[in-house]
Length: 170
Image (cartoon, rainbow, N blue to C red; front, side, top):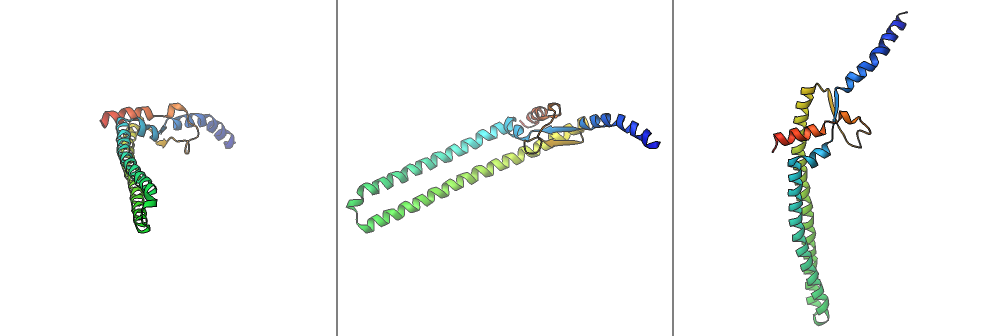
């Protein structure tokens, strides 16, 4: 007998409990926060500038190396074996320097990008915490294709986070 009474009240309460639980869940798209906040947009432009400057330097050194190689090939018949070996060794050293410069540029850009991402992530986390407290949210999930396959768009608070972020971090 008690099973029938419990069963009826549990069935009636289940949809209401589920609806209330959903009102306490939200999603934030961190990738959009990184790309669409003012700080993220500025940071991306700064990274592009650093990369472009480094790439320009790499292009110049690559062109210089290419000219030295072409010069060696053009004069090869007139040079002694010793001079050819010396110039080839110089080219090898210049090529290694170029590879090191390229690796350093990649490392610098990756480091700056990681620092920017970490900074924005920490700021987003603080803003999300404030919004969660204001709205009584119990959980805020990171929205990404790898973690959330589908969610009702009403649960997404990314736009609010971006607006609050830009107000707080100009």
